[in-house]
Image (cartoon, rainbow, N blue to C red; front, side):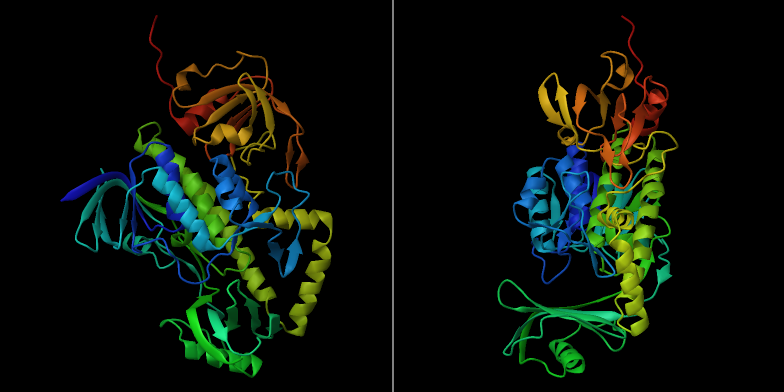
Length: 491
């Protein structure tokens, strides 16, 4: 028996869950295939969210679910130099300390409320695609038929491999063991460096010890064991500190690769399936969540017949450069983690620069995702950038910009003379909100920008058109991003 869905997502981690929520908000029939029988996640993964990810969740009206379970922190760093965002023009001028396991649970609860079906305890084993859709084979023998399949199935993505999408990049130059252990002796807490890399130990909330150990030789293949952790401790510290047991042991490397294409006809990639890199800088989960928010509304419009399939080409055009830049920065951070005298001199020099306002803001905006700028042409500085969450006065009372994005629908924010902008042929898919803005229009790094008369905001929160006194270019932008105009009936 074949079960049909509009979109099937392979992988129910952060990227897959966020994409499912975006599609469900857009009233698309979406389903997740996830090999885990429950949402539990064993061991340490991502430990927090960056500022732009918090903004994205605020755009959907769910950010408080996450901030109530985590702790606001200044978690942006480059080359071990902490970068303060507290003077940035955003309501989330900080990161959030929140373990990935908890993040996934909250995200899964939201997806459950949106009634997204999840096929658990199995995984995609293969697929075939034709001009009309994709047949997706599951490990339990079932077959799902979808218009589109999205691989959110991690760095070893079966979807990417089966689609024949190349994954060029750089092999690992270093590997690390990461473990959560019990010790009978007091651990040597803190971060240490040697000529080959960084290693550290820190207390966990339940009394266990979190251990990150660089390996003498680049490791791969078999999952590491407790004995490998013991050998690593003895090699780096001269003792195993009475290592007794481990609840989780895994390995990560600085392998850096990016999919040559994010799409093969009706198959797309997002998150780690599209890009892998060192975890230094905490970019991975955040890149994946923002991939999902960029892709979700576009895929929904294509599935629903609102926009032509060519809209999906903008997903790679916009997100591939963002990930490519992040990959280069994680490679730089890996190099900076080495502790020889020459690299120490580089770190000291970089730290001096990053104590200056302009370099700090530039780097902090990049690492936090607040400076992402999609190339939508020349014009007002807002074009292609994230829309600030300004306070508004509307006919329905006070609102914030992000409140208008809760349903993941585009918004034309009309701040000029009422009735001057006519979007009647698009009124079935674009909200038009007349308002007056309060406060300064300000962007990270760029600072204050001229207040526009109108702004067309995409569902992902990026500005698609800026009005500066006329509707010049508005209808072209509406057609490009939200489909052709609907013919009006004669009275």
